[in-house]
Each structure stands twice: as C-alpha cells, then as structure tokens.
Length: 111
Image 1: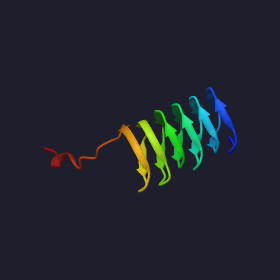
Image 2 (image 1 turned 180 degrees about the horizontal axis):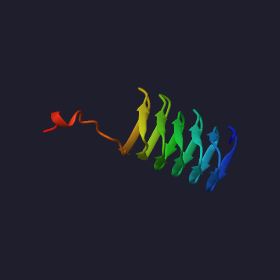
Image 3 (image 1 turned 30 degrees about the vertical axis):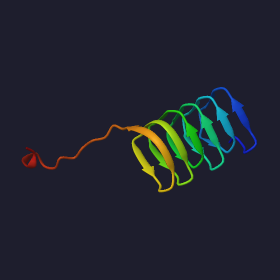
Image 4 (image 1 turned 180 degrees about the vertical axis):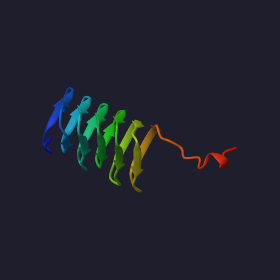
C-alpha cells in the first residue's frame, strides 16, 4: 500500500497487489490487482492482473482481468482488459481495446 501522504517518482513494481492512496509519477507493474482509491493518482502506465480506479489515472492500462472505473474516477489513456465497467459520473477520455470471443450461436444459424 502507498499511503495517502506518499509520493513516488519512478517505477513501482512487485509480485503482489497494490493499493494506491497517494501519488505515483511513473509506471506501475504488479502481478496482482491494482487499486487507485479516491484521492490517489497515477501519472504513468499500469500493468496488473486487475484494476479498480476511483482516483485519477493518466496513462495506458494493460490488465489480464477486469477493469472497474468508479464514479469518482478520472481516466485518460488507452485501456486494455478482459472486462470493463464504467460507473456513471466518472470522467473518462479513453480508447478501449479488448480481446473476446463472439458467440454466433449454432453453426446452422450462421450466414
């Protein structure tokens, strides 16, 4: 956890989850989930297993799992995740890229 009065300049990485209550100016790369709480901020790219954003993020996101953008979030960048949810009230300026399977139904119904 990076507490509310913590300011980090430079890359943050680790083999665990990370909760950001302070500010990071640099890239964040963790093997577990990342959470940016309301009042927390990141100016850099985020790579994680999942991401929950209630604070501010300016940078690109690459996660293997879900991305949750909360109503208090401010997000600008390119977002890549398996699932994205955006709550009303959030402020986002993003491009979303995602890989998914499209179920076209039984073979006989395809054209």
